[in-house]
Image (cartoon, rainbow, N blue to C red; front, side, top):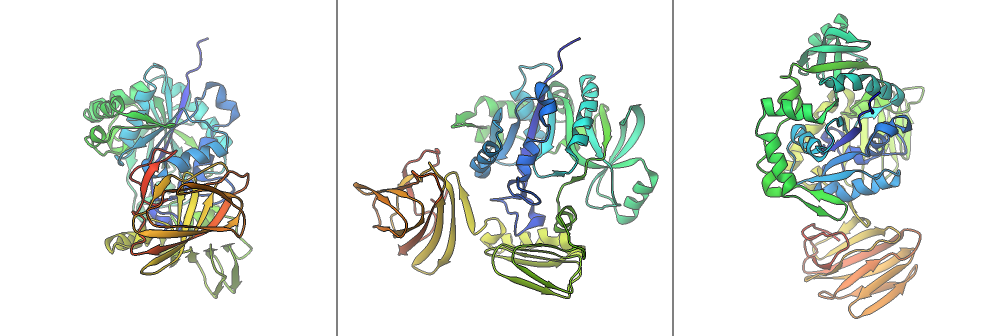
Length: 480
């Protein structure tokens, strides 16, 4: 009996989740957040195959963008996952190029199977998912491009559908057609027919077969990806695709580029409690609710309200007499809508972007490889921040041309380079750093270092920073 092929999980982490604004934004999207449990969506995805498939499953290959690289690495480390590779895309080129890169990373394994998974989905029945993957392996070994058809729970217009063709074996079928997001009437027809499934965007296939089919239909993509790999470089524990070469790659989805055009598509049916968490109402459906259908997260007071999702990360929030409402309060934004209109939240993000409002893409709390900072107040010549530095981490050695800084330790211990001095600061102790002075902040302790930073000067923008030395290889990123 031959050796079982190795399954290489490929985790795609390029989405922004704009329909979950203001919680999910480009700089800290939904896959990096714990929406329904203790673990984030990308952590759940990385652990999804489980120990029973580990003998034939590789560590995952993660494809993400530059802004998220340290957060992704830290979140995987926190759940004990050491990825085979974290590949940095200089710019988004959709799913087909991302998968083509992963396929070429494992080219030395001629029987390699790629299990392609978006990083921002919920699967409440992971064992059903693993059973479906195991049943799909023989099809993939035969040269099929397997997708997983999700058992529909309602005639949703938010998803694409897969129409089943001739049966193959068990819960596997030929794919008769892929159908775009339908109208309400069409969606009801699909459900009543009993031969349509939701398209969840999860795939299993041989890497070499995917590349063969991609070369048939989109012959320019794989060679351009190969060039970006060959000219790419290692950066700490990441691999950066070459920016100039990758810019020449055509943007294309796996659905349009391959799956809808190949004659090798197969579908394995599965009921695995799947959701792409593509809207606030979808998240509400996946969340724990009280007897009146309410999900309330934070300091919430509710009177005579039903079927509401209310989430406040800041102040006490009261709702009275609401039905089907969505209320989201973050440090810098408030969203109020109803379930019937929550798909239009993406239009809010579009309008904010057009107006140049940073709340469209960035949170008040900005994450860095060493921790995070949050602006709590600012004016024409000052800014006040909260800063949290993780144990053993330190900021870059840096200076500012236009601003001075006053640091006050609130919790933990700080080791500070301030010009020619190196000093230790404990709680309620402080130091002043004049403009132009080289300085660095480090947490040598075993608990988080929390401090308040008061900036003052003629300019307090995030781009007033000159890095002299940095443990994380950063040069052009704005902020600490």
